[in-house]
Amino acid sequence: MTVLATRYESMETDKFLQLHLAFAPSRILMAALQLRVFSHIAAGNNSAAAIARSAGASERGMRMLLDALVPLDLLGKAHGVYSLPPASQQYLVHESPDYLGYMMENEALWAAWSDLTECVRTGRPSAAVNRRETAEEFFPVLVQGLHITHREPARRLARALESGDSGRSLQVLDVACGSGVWGIAMAEANPHAHVTALDFPKVLDLTRKFTLQHGVESQFDFLSGDLKETDLGESRFDLALLGNIVHSEGERSSRHLFTRLHRALRPGGRVAILDMVPNDDRTGPMFPLMFALNMLVNTDEGDTYTLAEYSQWLREAGFARSEPVDLGLHSPVIVANRE
View 1 (tube, rainbow, N blue to C red):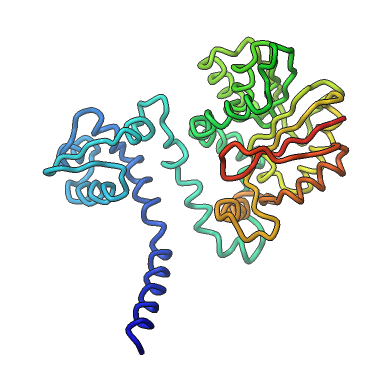
View 2 (view 1 turned 45 degrees about the vertical axis):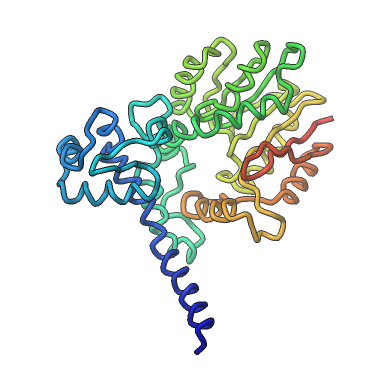
């Protein structure tokens, strides 16, 4: 075997080993969040011994965990003293208003992905998070972090949709709104916009909290119910928002929803769909394809769908045209018009 062939073989085997251990950074971050490592450091504990005492953990285990966080760029270290980089200070300290760790410290996704092999065999999840009995427990945890990650993209979408154009009145439906981040951005951009936020009752409790935080509560109505069953009315809205909803609903439910939204929109109204969109051959990008598996392990019928599939479904629901809008995200926003 030549030196070149040996080097190639080593590179390939290293790649497989790295993939096999790719779970480790995820679990390291989860453990650090569960032990409130970043909060303990923010409170002034900066040695392994001090952090371990504050966390109620062993010094040996804590030292190993802290050291593993350093090459992940989640902690700094100099002369045995640990410090918080600015991003960790903002997003990983539990007391921060921008804390992202609600879902990351939760075991639900970890447990679901542990059943991947069986889910591939059966085509079914071990537990579906979008059923109402589980959704009202799962989604309030998830959307608290998503509110932070989606805050700026939501504002870019509001600008792209020209929601503040000459202060015109705008009736907006935010479907399965979660934290309300997409509708909140519309309300912030246009003081004459009025948003109807639709979701399960326990989720809407969280939505109300975020509208208060953003100072737009007077622009919101809250519609409690299941998006599959709730009456959306007829010719009532100018804009419908579907922020990361279709992937968990699946094709059948989503196509039925598109038809109902067409009826609920006024002539000239639009629907904006934000989701994970793979290319038409389903060869990339990686994130939408990986997220399809996330839907396999977590939902009954969920998946990710291509731009061609969305275009066909929207056309069959009665929308005259649809087009992708680039917001600088992993996937374009799909905007469809009702004539």
